[in-house]
Image (cartoon, rainbow, N blue to C red; front, top):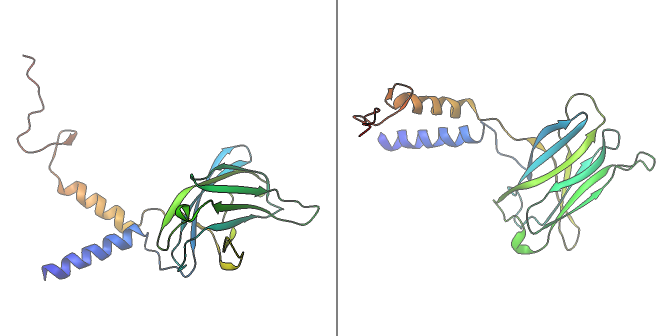
Length: 190
């Protein structure tokens, strides 16, 4: 009975940490978007190699020529090299950010996760920028390994928030903070 309850709690915590998401079938690139000022925004990315049997050494994010301009790579992790191509409406070409691992040791291994990628841009659309198309390519042969669309970084799931609330309520509260039983809150000035 105790073993079953422990397993259920573990599964609930895992589900909550994943935001209640279902398993993915493609490499996942999570994004968050932050306003910088005016029509300037910044995307931050977290790349998860959750579908490839090989290390992820190169990926490309695409920026619609009708919605983006003035792309600037702001940050990439050490060992990665960014290449930015500006959107060109006259040539009917979308812009892109292509990021390449400089060595296999820098690549994202199967099951691995790497953040620290960001790009700043001017947004020509209305509202906030959203998801983008991406490709994963073999860095040596340029073969297409995977394609997908970025997904927002999930908010904490309701189950995780509930568990955190229960954990706080389970602790003894006195005054304005948590204290161990018998702990004196008034210090002797001696």
